[in-house]
Length: 341
Ligand code: NAD
Ligand code: UDP
Image 1 (cartoon, rainbow, N blue to C red):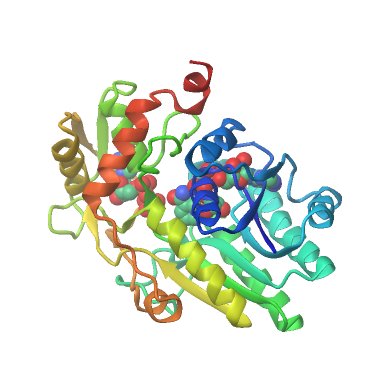
Image 2 (cartoon, helix red, strand yellow):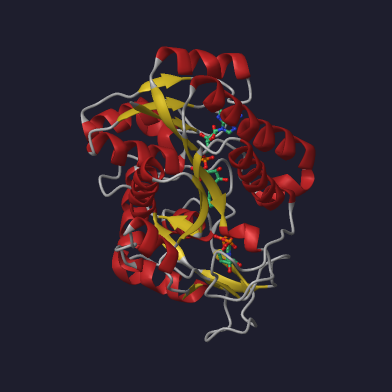
């Protein structure tokens, strides 16, 4: 039986595809390439020696999605597809609700139509909003402060309601903390459009000379060095977490929300210093004002993932920084230019 990865050519999808193929699973990728490149497929093949089936479709097009289910025996879907830029979601809320919610609804419809029972959904620690206290347990209060976050929160609710009405479904809502890093080969990694919003790709692009300096958003937070603390998790650990979630789904029915993080908080300055130390590069920075909506700290309680999935993140901040730099320095302009080289 095959695993369908919606958003499969994206950053986390590509790493998870590699992990699935290396584990001997059949992976089918579907993506509209709105935020990724077809070149990813070549890279996946270079790493694994296998080329997954690929469909360039909009997941919210039910007829197109049906064709994928008709062509493959799919029992599991990992649903990554969605828009993910927080700032853009504030400016274009309707685009975000339309794309992200319709995608989730059509995935569920297709699963029910074709008898696929297992769903692993890409949720986010953003569903905890500014409300819970770190370490965040899965039963901490939820609520969001931007449309992107609400699409995750609402998708979780849609999935819970669908599973209530269809008890044969088995769903895991994975709440990722801060995925960073890249495959150690340097063949796949994060390739943001335009100027990155997130810290690690920003640091990498300063280090490679694409950007002049990093602005640290505030040094007056209630944290040991005053800069924001987050739970960065290596994307390869995250990919393994998906395999563990799939295997959990295959053995249980119902819905579980599960954090995927390391449980360790790292500050902006700590990550920056680790990046400089591990890679022997300089990352100029200046301290700027706080970014609206940022919290002092956000890190996971990882007990539930450990007990349900028997999974824990193993890679260190140094691994994350080394692999992020390996990817960035080998592909200074992402997938596009190197693929023509
Ligand atoms: P990404 O943008 O690299 O991958 C998402 C993929 O979905 C892209 O390739 C895009 O082209 C595709 N896509 C979007 N809408 C689509 C549609 N309607 N039909 C088909 N394809 C569509 O993002 P990522 O970092 O790999 O994130 C994967 C998932 O995890 C997303 O749902 C994201 O919201 C969630 N997530 C990401 C992070 C993070 O920091 N990267 C954190 C928490 C949650
Ligand atoms: N950050 C920063 N400068 C940047 C980008 C991010 O100082 O250019 C900080 C941000 O304020 C937060 C941390 O880095 O404390 C992680 O930010 P990111 O956007 O990567 O993740 P999120 O805030 O969504 O968890």
